Length: 330
Ligand code: FAQ
Image 1 (cartoon, protein in one colour):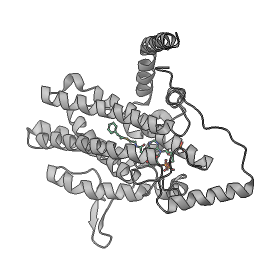
Image 2 (cartoon, protein in one colour):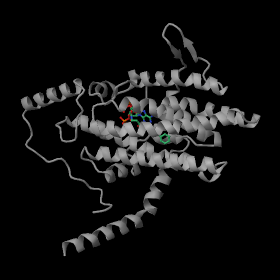
Image 3 (spheres, helix red, strand yellow):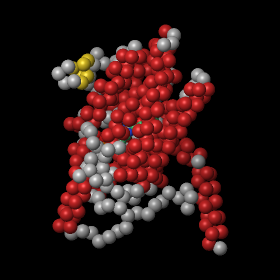
Image 4 (cartoon, protein in one colour):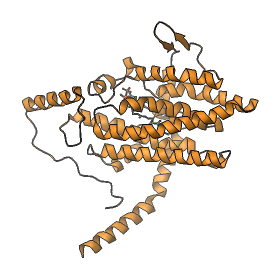
């Protein structure tokens, strides 16, 4: 029925013996090692399925909650051109959420269950969206740094082991690339503007730099899921590897904008061939993911209100689908 997002659960079959289980697991791991994509109908360990549902639902929720900080600026965009670009970007983010929910549904969970977990505060979304977009420059910075960090991660995810997730990532990365460029282009305009515009740009980057680095998650040594997810190729690169890649790509872009990054320890290390950088404030990260960041409560309240306000649409869609089903059955 339209609007009824419940889906068929995987068929229950007799439990394999421990010997059969070991064989299934070995065959599964061999497929992963050989870079053969795992598809929904393939046998997979329960923990693999569970890890994917956790990560993919968190990812989809991030896309959806991520519309809020930017949506806040739609009515205040400084020109029609900027408004149209921002509107298109926000719509893309909503679409990304939907592709990823659909990909996650192939694992036997329903979008309704995943969204309910978010409303109930049981599911996470990216820490970054608990920071406010205070100025127009933040819209450019979100595109440049937040989408930039997201792409760095997602390009690696697109080469992972689970077919539906990887395929969703390919399209999403193309769109995120447009988002990153529109953000950078916005900041480039500010960088050539008045003293106030330049100051607004610098202030925005000062506020978003560290939270953007936190998007990659805890250091590898403190990341409970990394080792197993890397073995299963759900993650192709570790949190620290991706963070370093992002920093190395971003520092020259900051230099081109004529701004500084708020890290006195940030400097090129000739020997490593990478930028060294300072210690992330992991206490702040923990505080934000526990629900105590600057905007956690506001984001959750807006999400729940949108769900409640949309009840009549779901009811109408279901009534419409029921009417058509009844007509078809006549
Ligand atoms: N925020 O062991 P790990 C976007 C949690 S999309 C909140 O390292 P894992 C587009 C983690 O869930 C951005 N929680 O975990 C856009 C786990 O908690 P749990 C979103 C975080 O999964 C742009 C615990 O910490 N992208 O921005 C964060 O192996 C602009 C331990 O961590 C994705 O979600 C965090 N930053 O690695 C939209 C990509 N980091 O579940 C609008 C997919 C860690 O045990 C505007 N996800 N945690 O309770 C991933 O790649 C991975 O899940 C990581 C974390 C890398 C985020």
